[in-house]
Length: 257
Length: 274
Image (cartoon, rainbow over all chains, first blue to last red; front, side):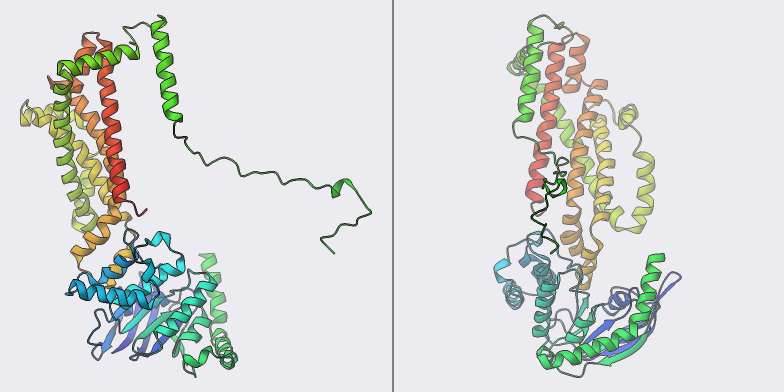
């Protein structure tokens, strides 16, 4: 199943946020979206996931989702969005409750999702008892439970410390390794984009337009090797040079707002 | 070199001194028995002053006299007669007002139309002291229990509706968006996200409405009732039976404490995740 951003334009009142953004996320492909602060990255993701109605243009799907997918487009949120009154297990089970699944099927899906994210021993724990990294693991586990075709990740690591970020990044690489699941990964962190994405969509300053689409010229598996580091760094520098001046302007704009 | 002082030179500046601790205070912790000890002390002083004749017993009877009055009320069965009348009024009035308040509060929290209409009405009617409506309610509903119960229900309704829609408004939007992103149906979002999310505010509202109900039942019983703690307190005052009057006040205090404890227990049970 492909996800297509088709000429998406969006305004918040008089404020133009996105201007004619079009690109396609192929099945199993990981596309990162980067750009200066306020360029509309998260807005674009909300539109792609059907949580926000664009002013014009539309998100579209092409092809059928995998037969076992209960929620083809599934979000992983920056702030985790966990139900604080529910245990880890209940949070992961939450999106399954309204599906026509037997209790045994639900249990199996929850078990599998918890196992894949290393949360099996924390099933009865409440979110407030967990670290930020573990909370995001619950968010990822909940997303995996519905067997998504495409994960929509809105800066999923930005609220975490650098060590936790590194560990979760390794988890993402592992989860996306078999190509069965695609992702749109919004981030301001170019290293994350270069580590994870097949292609990187660079947006301009507000209103966000596609400035460039950069293809990462190596497999995700190869990016963990020492020899790849220099190439990835060069790629990050290339993207940074594209957005640096606009990022400075955007920062000043925010400060003067 | 920066961290080593020359050993052969000693001056006043080389002497070490502790950094003064400046972080004390602003973390009040109540001791477990402090409040009870203070209460016992006040009662003891009160009793001693009364027994020594320093306080006129007509104006302020001693704690032992109040306890004796309470005991006699209990033995004679009058205590239960008054208490049961008040409990019935509070119970029925509070339940009716709470049920209506929760329903209207949720409607205001979830529906644009209900919000536009409801908030206007609530803003206009909430400030009215509900006891002022008792005469009107007596005209409408007769002189039985109904106007007293309706007064309590009205008082409880407005506070409950406000706390419920404030609670619904305070549910983090990201949780609702999360549920929507999983195509969770509206009714399930209300039941599994909005209700538990609003519950802290709703329970906090219960504390307020319990006090409102207690205040209104006493006021209503003072205006037009034969039985009830309010009526009993008024009669005792009219007859200058201050020991009985204060026995009624003690009952009200214990009643308020009991309600507070029940709500506290509910909070512990239902909000254990906080």
